Image (tube, rainbow over all chains, first blue to last red; front, side, top):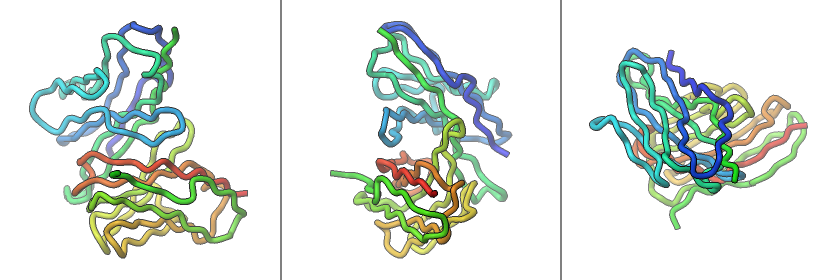
Length: 117
Length: 113
């Protein structure tokens, strides 16, 4: 069964500091990987996704993530955060079900990033 | 404006009283799905629809029903709500399938007393 593990439930950082939000997945087959962001009292929006090709993926708002197949990881990074980056971040993976015909999107439990002045 | 809308945004109801949460998208998307979000559990998929008249269970379908009679609409039905269905519900749509970018609605906060 596919699972997504976000290793930190909360990450507090100071403004202009770098940040890394960690995500690991378990799968023996190829996967598609995503990071979504949820600002307070809003729905989710896509930050970036990895489907194939270059393992370094750049997204919106200066975020990037690196797909590491050997480590089964897809960590999200930003070199310098702003107060406005305060939000909850969700890692997600598309997995295939039995027979490869039943694709489902599974989310991690989320990481709350709090950027302090 | 391209968007996913949900109604109502907030609902307080009592155990056993049937309710429907509507979801509509104006982007001509094929794929639609429902999620519930609970503290510490992230988002869990309830049902999804690959296209009109084709729906399938997600990870937590018990106690929910859906229908997809038109491409733009995907209502979520709770025939007999129970307190454990108190949650924040999100509808989402994407162009063709689940690995396309999901566009989320604003959410419906449901409380079942």
